[in-house]
Length: 359
Image 1 (tube, rainbow, N blue to C red):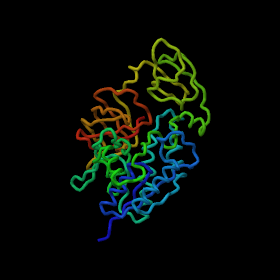
Image 2: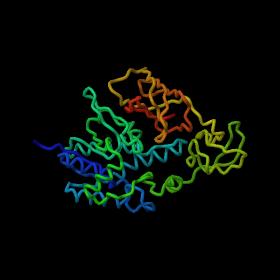
Image 3: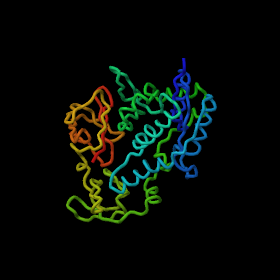
Image 4: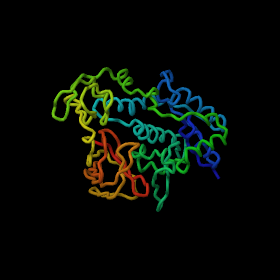
């Protein structure tokens, strides 16, 4: 019987390397692919960054160790068009972007998936921590067993039609178990540190990145809710909703960024209590739950996350505009709901239902 062929997106880290080992052990014909997303001469000052030249070398070494073919593909132009430009434009528009979601949506699960099919692969696998279940012949995604490593939030824009082609073998593992497997397989990256930062900003300083690649921002006013001028800002792209530090204003109480107004080039600040939101609008809503939903569906008693590390809050979601937009109403208010962030929905049992972009 012919083996099923599977492409593994190998980042050079522990997780995707273990995925390649597991799938080969399970009898798949494994092909490793590493994406070069930006020039390898970008300065890397942290050992916890990813996507650097060292990572390509590490992925090659793992592939050699387990005897699978490995290819490095130049996706720099696509990554720049779909991820980096969006990142810069979002900050210019007063939004707070999530580049990992765009990378998954446009690079890994669109461009790379098509490439994998071009290699004759039946599946594409990654090292994401998300659980997959089959219910009534339909694939559903769930929160990973390792809640601290769960990455389901970053996959809410996955296309439903692509779900049968995607595999996430680590959804049933704790991170510590993945490390143990890496040691068992004796792969070169078994003790490699985890990546923590945005891959194309390895030093973690996004403001310096924006200054270098997008130019200096336009100076404008920092005002309170009554439009009293409290100071000046050096470009709206340097601020995010909920930010307290680096405001450079002197008041008798701590103030936070409440709104970023692109049209008037203003930053509005106020007390922390003013950051609370009970309702907001989503666009580009993507449904990943079982079956289909009607145009004016109401999703009741769902768990709602407004950012990656946010503890889910129960609420209701009202769909409209042919299911592309939604109004979210939270039972308990959330702090710092920011335009451009993802709002992700779950059932009470941890099933990922999809989500949209906060407006």
